[in-house]
Image 1: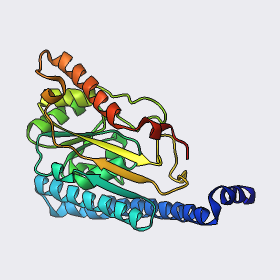
Image 2 (image 1 turned 90 degrees about the vertical axis):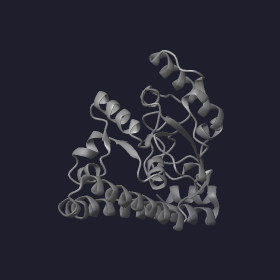
Image 3 (image 1 turned 180 degrees about the horizontal axis):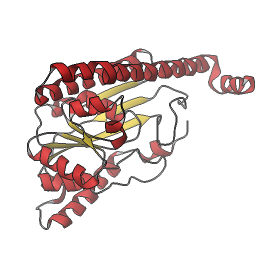
Length: 276
């Protein structure tokens, strides 16, 4: 341990080493508080809400707003502690949207935390385990988030809700991207977009230096403070990506390919392979 600390001091300098140590403590504190907050919401606040608020629509609205506030507070805490920084370009494009598929690349663990803080009333697909965990199932049920347990039911539910005017957050990759590997998009997001005739809001996320990537633990922090950049363009139609729509199956594949190309053009591939 002493040798490891000495090596890091030599590499980063005393000031850099203390900065990294502080960010490590701040990250651990932030995730701990996030877990405690989620536990309190899931075991106390939301069960009480279920008893008091009988109207499912009002319960959903309350739950989603509260989740959005929790996520916003988590991000504010990490920024205030100097753990991270971020900037948003084009946030005005996110206002007054409906029947929109909000898609983004997925470089880090907390991308969904950012997006749900930006779009708290949006639909969101969650892991089946979240809907079954005794500490989180009341949150998922209250917010009416969509379980990924049955792919066919998930797909149909997403399409139905978007057709009715809801906005849906999805990561076309399905999970965090593999560091240093090309982007790979699944057909799910494209299928929902085409079948629901949705507007598309393609958000580009950059995180420099990379952190909280797939396969990394929270304590594997970079040598300098990571900075997130969110680029939010104006919404687009599917036709803007692929022209006129023909056969549905072919349109889905064309849109998937066009969306992948859109992100490949915008993401700095060097940042995905850089070392910390």
